[in-house]
Amino acid sequence: MLAKTRQRYRFSILIFSCVTMLALILSSCTPAGTANRPSDTTSPNQITNGGTWIDDLVNEPDSFIPNATVQTFAQMVMQALYAPLFVGDAKGQIHEGLATRVPTVANGDISQDQKTWTFHLRPNLVWSDGQPLNADDVYFTWQLWKNPAFAASNTSIINHIQSAEVSSDKLSITFHLKDAFAPFLTTWTDGGYAPLPKHHFESIAPDQIKKSSDNRSPSVVSGPFTMSESKPGDHYTVIRNPKYYRAAEKLPHLDKVVFRAVGSQATVLEDLKSGAIDSAWFLDASKIPAYKKLNNYELFQTTSAGYEAIHFNENNPALKDVNVRKAIAMAVDRQQLIQIARQGAAQPICTDHSAAYKPGYQEDAKCPDFNIDAANKVLDDAGWKLGADKVRQKNGLRLEFKYSTTANNAWREEDETINQSNFQKIGVKVNIQNYPASTFFSTFLGGGKPGTYDLAEWSSSYNYDANDASNFACDQVGKSNFNWYCNPELDTLFGKEQQTTDANQRQQIFNQIHDILLRDFPTATLFSPNDLSVAIKGTHNYQPGPFVASETVNIMNWWCDNGKCPAKG
Image (cartoon, rainbow, N blue to C red; front, side, top):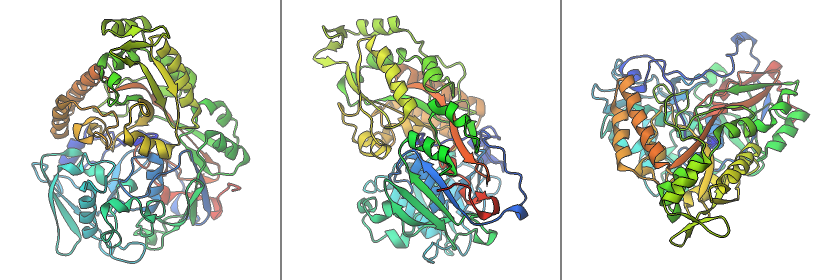
């Protein structure tokens, strides 16, 4: 998604200072993640409000309706537009947002059996149009998200809700879950999963909401900014929301943010060279030497929670054969990809959990070795014979596939070229065809059409927790599980890890999950890419986080010297 994830489409994540999310809900501590840019040490009385901040988006957002997309760049803009119940920060810690406190067993907001959760909302909240914002909106939102007609991007957590009720004063909502489910909080964290305005959407059929003008130009919001100008394919301008619940704290500091949907890493670099922008995120690793020459910008390289992988569409009959998927995974030279395509800006992994996850990350995972001869033997033994054109065939099926990723991404194109060459050595032919992110993460992946989508590369992560059911659970097939892969054995393990409180036991369950993923190969994990971003000197509090909203996680706190942002525009 990024991706979630992470293109973001990154499907989002979390590390814990209290060891696990389940430990979190049993105490009053808060979760913590990887550190990014050092915290701004400027005292509040030195901050000057005002200014227009210009930010380049490498990919075009596809929707600004919470839980209507898993695309990271869309979620980044939504962080400016919507106030969530809970909000993350640059370190991956979760804080109260519209809610007055983070629920725990200790403060009574979570029952001892972890099946009942209560969220308390701040009084006197309003939407940007002045209408009351309360627990009725939260109730409406989860009902909408679970409605198949709306087609929410992620229902893996919402599906655990059995019922809910709103208090008489509409300042709290209590959810009753079907089972104990520790990651429940994460579905309400950051703007991409914020409540929707009931009074605005209740008269619109669920299947029409994404088709409405609100999809790219929301008219009723709750965040630090409101949409001022929406020009898909060009730019999205947001301006200060005077009805933001933190307006009395003089937040946001900026008057305006212009998100430029440039769609090209080359354009980003040219904008940096000319000083036309204040920031950009998810930069092209192949251009690291050029970024380092930008005297007026700071370059940040931080550990990502995401994993870059080739995803196999198991709707394709040939890819239903695990031997084919396994052989392709064995023909991936991870070190070559990291050193050449990523200029060293990545960490070697072969599972869906980077080193950010504790528990989650498995250092001793049994990764497939890069071995062309062994990969050929796997295919030979499975009966896939080389044809005269050096492409393997069996029972009328050919190992010839489309290989796609997000367009205009130089290092991913380098990945494709390297992998294409190695796959050819095992009798697998791939034809490269890439798509704009707005297409890639919607109709392309969602369509699941073999021959169009066969192998697809993107980066994913999870929501403030290592729970990975969203990418691989059977009930997420075609929603956020774009591998069209289902294994009931995995579903059982997902249930166990979601209800296990002991960190060591939870890690052992993740290890079992990894064993299955490295046996079934629904994906071939390439590496964990480091996040690259830049901010111009004279800007402050630009601190991208590792999860969900990523670059804009603390956008309400961004500010510029003397209330004037340096970019020339």
